[in-house]
Amino acid sequence: MPIRTASLSHQIQKNGVRLHLAMVTRTRSQGADQPASEAEQALLEERRSLKAAKATLQAQPKAPKPQPAWMTRVTKAPAAPKAAKAAKEPKVAKAAAKGNKPTRAEKLTKKAENLDAAKKATKKSAKT
Image (tube, rainbow, N blue to C red; front, side, top):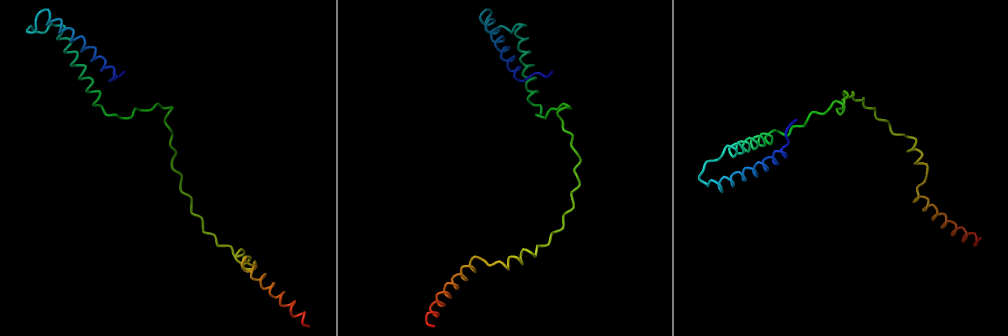
């Protein structure tokens, strides 16, 4: 199982605390000019190795992980395209039916003509 980067950071932090404690105890008891003890050297080496491991983990590419078999989809082969349909001819019956039916404007003009004709007809009939 791979080591997580977050756990490495935590281990580096804990190691740093132990290393600092070892350094402080050595400087207080023996003086700052004394060489580092074996425990302090071991902590320094462990810290270097942890930092190297963290650097290698972060350098790895963020490649996608392989998916389990039950999650993968089975892709079907693409279907052959259907043949294009021929264009239909426009219906002539509708155009012919439309010509027989008067429009609204034609109806209104005819109605106005009929009213004028009715007025004139009543006037003519009164003379005769």
